[in-house]
Amino acid sequence: MKKVYVFLAEGFEEIEALTPVDIMRRAELDVVTVSIYEDLTVVGAHGIPVMADTIFGLCDYDDAALLFLPGGMPGAANLLNCEPLCELLEKKHREGTPLAAICAAPAVLGELGLLNGRPATCYPGFEEHLKGAEINDNALIVKDGDTLLTGCGPAAAPALGFALVEQFCGREKADEIRSGMMFGRTLEVRG
Image (cartoon, one colour):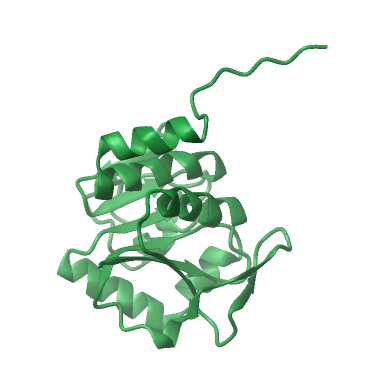
């Protein structure tokens, strides 16, 4: 079975990593969280320690259905500074493996030249790093075919998760998960 690899670096935005992971696992996708370090525990931008499923060097990624980069700072910068990860992203891009990134992390793809001529979004202020991209700063998520999905920030995390479930499992499954999680209900506040 193909796997979704989610890369965790110190300072990652917790909601941007864990919300899509949760949604994809509810759809029974094989999702693997990967520490880019030699330690399984990675601390997020808000001080939440998360234990990854594995460390970077223990996987060969031949079975990758998708490589996903959560944002957050300095998480995205730490991802960009991880040379083996950057080499993997470039290799998988050449092979046509889908890539997804959210918030500040599309900057990693941009700095590697992987967004050239493609529509993308990111967290405001990171646009200059989306080198060559056709930037859409109004969308929550931007999808370019089945090989690129970018999200603008923490609010995009659920939408990105559902979009990936739809891509890999179909709309019916995405709607089933969305309904089960009670997305789409209206907010009512009293008092």
